Length: 158
Image (cartoon, rainbow, N blue to C red):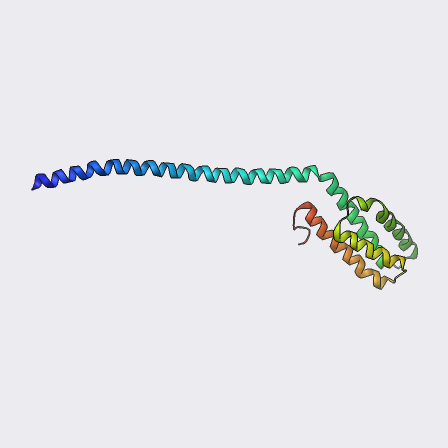
């Protein structure tokens, strides 16, 4: 009886050893594939970050010019809408028209173009500063939103 128990134990150990070896083999395959997948995901994320960085760097001159012109457009419309000095308003109106009919056309899109048109129409109609103030603010907000899209960040909106 002792010998039978011993034989069974030996047989069990002989069967467990190959099963453990197979289990370790499959565990090794699983961990290898898991590590490879995680590495591939990290590399893909890094490649995407690099592509976004390259896109921003490639469009940097455009983005800088857009920022400069949007800032100037908001400054001149704010001056027109708020300044009590008639000469300052005249100079700002002149610059607004230069931007409107020229440089700003290089970089403006969508809501900025619409806000510029609304401001020009009110300006051409000799609207009061009370009418121009909300239009100037609308242009500033449109510029902010467009810059956020162009630069690919919500930092402009915060």
